[in-house]
Image 1 (cartoon, rainbow, N blue to C red):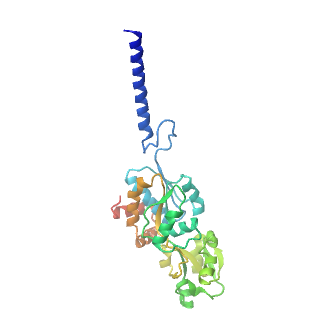
Image 2: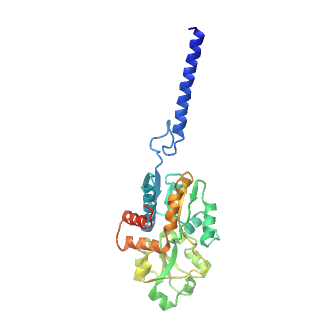
Image 3: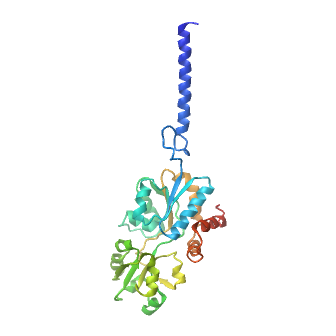
Length: 305
């Protein structure tokens, strides 16, 4: 055999080997589950990190998301009880957290304090425009868990209170709520601007309802799905001027995985109702059940497990 033929066959063999290697490398890098091949870090294996606020109701929803995704074959990591929006939003924006149960109105005001949207559909549409690049919202739920102003039934009867505006002219009012409420658009400044109601502010945080019942504050910022509104005989004041934006439960998700998990999470949102959310919260606060057990039962009851 001539040297020319030998060199030709060797070149062909080397070319075939190179092509095969490139083909294998291309397959590895296109694998959406493994997150890539080659020199990519082995820790990035497509795990979906789910976060929650330091709030039992939010944790229950996050756990429902987690178990629903696990049931659909996804690998999930829980990063719950982070705190308030100022703490966890940077982690969503930098991709450290992939999925988070949120509330449309409050989240919209976080990104756009000057928004004029108030209805559920308008707030949802405005939120989609206001989100930073890299984040999306999936379908919103009919369930709401929004800020509301509450008084005791006795105080409401004594002062003939039905709406927030009825508080105007009452001296010595103290509003209680989480510390950040003092700076929120619907806090003391909003009360004055929208309803002409003047209040002092007390940062009562987790003790807000206790302080209200004890008479240390007269107005309390309580989430509308809080079971203590019913169990502690509170009256939620109507908000005809839209001080509070509609705030439906909505999943905020990294745009990179939004399409991949949409079917699973949208089914959860469709099944979660306002009354259902209150019932979940009662199981946590009254029945003292764990978020894991509450979520598992809810998913089974709604044929989502």
